[in-house]
Image 1 (cartoon, helix red, strand yellow):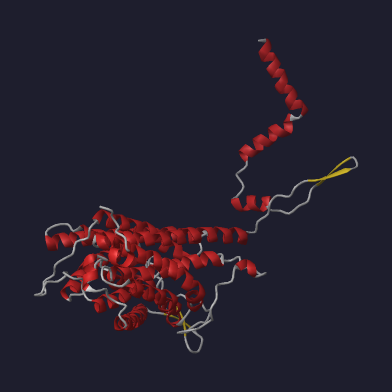
Image 2: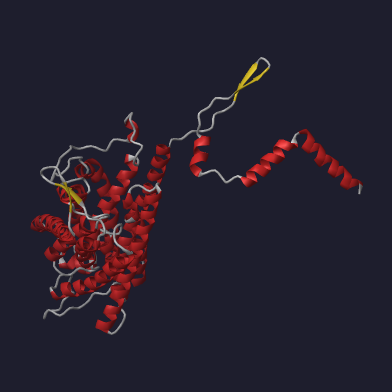
Amino acid sequence: MNLHRVLLAFLVGAVLIGGPATTLSVWAQADTPEASAEETLLEETVEEEVVVEEGEEVVVEEETPYFKREEIAYSMNTIIMFLCAVLVLFMQAGFAMVEVGFNSSKNAVNIISKNIMDLSVGAILYLFVGFGIMYPGVEGAWFHWPGFGPFDRNMANPEIDLSYVSASSDFLFQVAFAATAATIVSGAVAGRMKFTGYLVYSAILTGLIYPISGMWKWGGGALAEMGFADFAGSVVVHAVGGFAGLAGAMLLGPRIGRYSEDGKSQPILGHNIPLAALGVLILWVGWYGFNPGSQLAYTSNANAEVTSYIAVTTTLSAAAGCVVAMFLSWGMFGKPDLSMALNGALAGLVGITANCDQVTMESALIIGAVSGVLVVLAILALDKLKIDDPVGAFPVHGVCGVWGGIATGIFGLTMPEITLADETIKVLTRSEYIMVQLKSTAIICVWAFVTMFILFSILKAVGLLRVSAEDEIKGLDIVEHGMPAYNN
C-alpha cells in the first residue's frame, strides 16, 4: 500500500510540475491525423537559423539537412539506372552459358572469349565513337558525326541537369545494350569462325553499325520522327544482332558434319543442356534491367507503376513463349523438347521488348505465344535451307525481333504523334501505326543484314572468316586459344 501511495504521489507531482503540456501533447497526437509525407518533407527542409541566448554566450543550433526534390529524384534515378545497367551487363554471362551449353565442349573457351571481348572492346569503342553517334541531339537525322571523344560528366557543367540521371549511369546502360547486340552473333557463328575475324566484326558493330541505326530511333533520328516505337529494342537491339548473325551464318556455311552428303540434317547436340538452361534463366532475370530499366525515370508514382507493370508484361510474354514452344515441339516431335522451350522463353522476351510499356497483359500473352510458334518454325526453316545457326540466334532475335516491332503497331495502346511539314501535330491511326512499324523495322533489318554481309564477305576474301577444316575438327579452344575448357 505504501508503494502505491508513493507512485501515485509521483505521478500527481509530475503532472503539476511539468506534465500537463506533455500529457496534453500526447493526447493531441493520438487524436491528430498523421502529417502527409509532403508536409513532413517541407517541415524537415525549412532553412531556419535558431539562436538561443544564454547570458553573454550565443549558441547556434545545427540546421536540418536540406535536399531539393530534384536532387532526390536525380539521385534515385541514377542509382536505379545503374542497377539496371548491371543487370543488362550480367546478361553477357547468360549469353555465354546458352552458347556454350548448346555447342561442343571443344569450343567453350572460344565462345566465352568472344563474349567477354564483345563487352570489353565494345565498351571502349562505344565510349569514343558509338555513344556520340547514337545520341547527337540532331532530330530527324540519318547520320551525324560529332567527332571522337568520351561524354561530358554532369559535374563538369556548372548547370547540372537534375531532371534526369547522371551521364555516367546513362552511358553504362547504353553500352550494355550495344554489347548485347554484338553478342547475339556469337552463337550464330559458333564453332567455325576465326577469333581475329570476330574481333573485327564486334568492333565495327558496336562502334558504328548499331549506333547509327540506334540513333534513327533513340537518338531522335529519322525513324523517331516518323513515329516508330521500339521501347527497349526488339528491333534496334535484337533484330540488328539477329540479322547480323544470319549474314555471318550464311557466308560461313554449316559446321562440318551438320549435313550429310545427301543433304540430310544431322543435329550436333550441345554438350551441356543444364548450362544452357542456366543461361536462359540468367537472361530472363537480366531482362528485368533491360525492359523495366528502359523507362529511364522511376521516382514518381506514375513512373514507378509503369516500371513494375513492364516487368509483368515481360514475364507473361516469356512464360507464354516457353509453354507454347514446348507444347508445339511435343506435338511435332512426340517429346517435349527442352531446347525449344528454352528458345521459346527467349523468343517471348524478345517479342515483348518493343511494346512492354503499352500493351495489356492479355496482349502480352498473345505476343509471347506467337513468338513461341515463330521461333520453332524459324528453326525448322533454317534447317531446311541448310543455314547452320547452332543456338537459334536468328529465329530468336531476328524473327521475333521483327515480330516485336510489328506487334507494337497491332497491340500498342498509345498512338504516336508526328510533326508534319507545316509543323502541325498529327496522331497516327492504327493502320498508319502498323505501316510505320513495318517500314521502320524493315529499314533497320536491311541495314544490319546488308552492312554485315558486306563485312563478312570482306573477311572471307582476306582469309579472316572461317578456320580450316582440320582446325574445326580439333576444336577452336586448342587451335585459337591453346587451352581446353575441361581438363579431363
